[in-house]
Image (cartoon, rainbow, N blue to C red; front, side):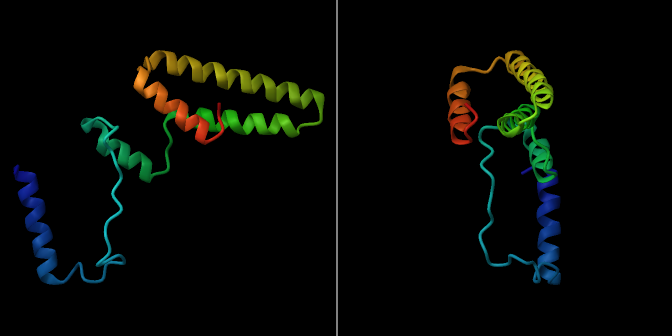
Length: 123
């Protein structure tokens, strides 16, 4: 155990002894831990912070915008507005494709990505 773990354990033990943890909202219930096996160990803290803050990775944000634009185009009845939305959609798709090409997605991740896209109706 490293020094930080020892300090953390001691602080937790002290808080338990003082009763500072007795009134926690989920006391006695199991923790809902995220499975972070797919995230490299050095990025897990940053990933958790961003996830808790509601920040999506750029590729997911782009996919979300692409789906929204596709739905808007489907329901759009004005030709000039449809053309503007189609132009925006094309830009988003190009940006997404560029981003994915730059990341050199490996084959296993590609299969997983396709399953996720299928689940959300993106491809």
